[in-house]
Image 1 (cartoon, rainbow, N blue to C red):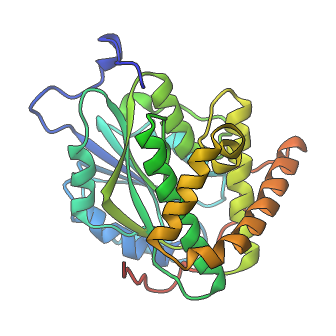
Image 2 (spheres, rainbow, N blue to C red):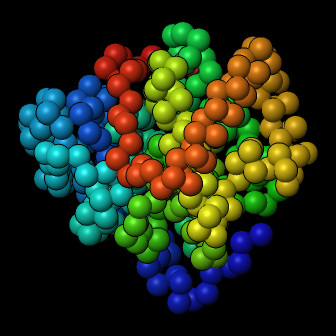
Image 3 (tube, one colour):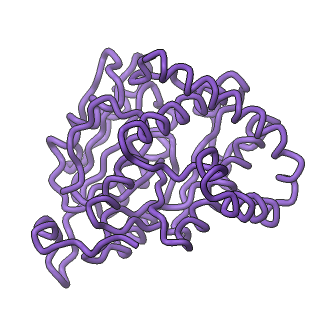
Length: 316
C-alpha cells in the first residue's frame, strides 16, 4: 500500500473545508470537431482557469478565438512540437491546486469534473474516470471497445490488490505533481506511477464516465497501440512498473485470468474478440519494443484521424 505522505509533501494541498482552486488543460492538434464537442462542457463547468494547448491548419484557431470567456488562456502552435512540449508550457501557466489534464477528443459533463474533485483527500494525488468509447461502428472499433473493457477490469483488479493504478484521457492531478517531462510518451501513466512513488494514492473514479473515440482503421489502431506499448517499455526501463497485462502475465498470471474473465462476463462478445485482439496487441507490442530498442522518436506520433470528425454517440 502507498506510504502516507509526510507533512512537507502536503504543502501544496488545499486547506481543509475550502474548495481548491482548479485549472483545466486541454491538449488538441487539428481537432476542431472534437474541441467543439468537449469545450462547451468545460466552459459550463466551475473550473477557475482553462488552458487550451492547440494548433494545426484546420478551423481550431478560429473556433477557440471565438470563445469569449475570461478564464481562457490559449496557446496556438502553428508547427506541431509534440505533447510533452505542450505539457511543459502548460504547467508554467496553470494556477490551480488541482489540475484537470484533458485530451481534446473526449466528451464529458461539467458534473464529471466536480465528481473527480470530490474524491480528493490529503492522501490523494491523482484521480481519473472510467473511459467508454463512443464510436463503435466496425470490427476495428469493436476491438477498441474490448481494449477499454479490459483496461477497466484491470484497473479494478489491480486496485483491489493495492497496486498503483494508472489511466489517462482525463486526469485530475495535484499541481505539485506536475513537473517538466523530458520525452515521456505515456505521460498519463507516468504521472500516476510517480504519484504512487511519492506516497500519494491514485484513485479510479469509476462512477465518473467520459466518452472518447477509438481508431476506426486497423493501421491507426496498430499505430496507437505500438506507441502506447513503446511508452510502457520506456517507463519500465526508467525504473517505473506499469501494471500492463504483458508484464503481469509473467509476474501475476492470476490477475490476468481474473481480468479477462471479468471482461467476458461484462460483455460476452469479448470471448470472440479476444483472440483477434491478442494478435493485434502482440504485433503492436513487438513493434513498440523494436522501435524502443532502435531509439525511434515517438515524441510526435502519427495523428489519429478516424473517429474525430463525426458526432459522438454516447450510448452505454
